[in-house]
Amino acid sequence: MQRKMLPKIWCEQKTKTAGPNQLRIDYAISREQFNTINGGKRYVQHVIAENANEFFERMNNGATCYFCGLKGMMPPVLDTLESVSGNVDFDGKMKEWKKNHQWHVEVY
Image (cartoon, helix red, strand yellow):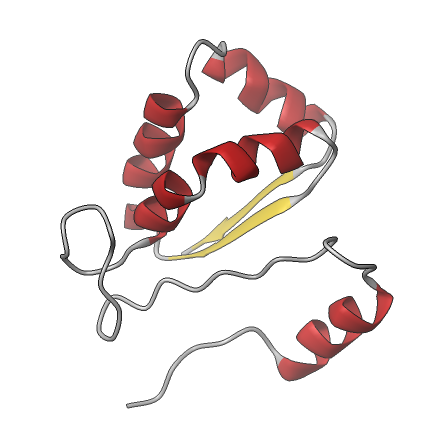
């Protein structure tokens, strides 16, 4: 089974230029991984829910988030982000991330 991964050159460049704790790449491979929430297949929204506090902390400190995949994956991802955002105005936060060029989505 062949996995789609980030291009090796991109990963190498980012890991060479990133300082300690500046780069985190998470994969959600539903055919091979199980989530810790209900033991089912692991999708992007499960990775976000499992790491919600760190996700928002990093984004609030200027991190960049990049999603790539099928366009059908985005509604559950956005629903999960909104549900784990706590008392944050999620729509306002998304506008802020987009304005600051922190939020990148490439779906097909």
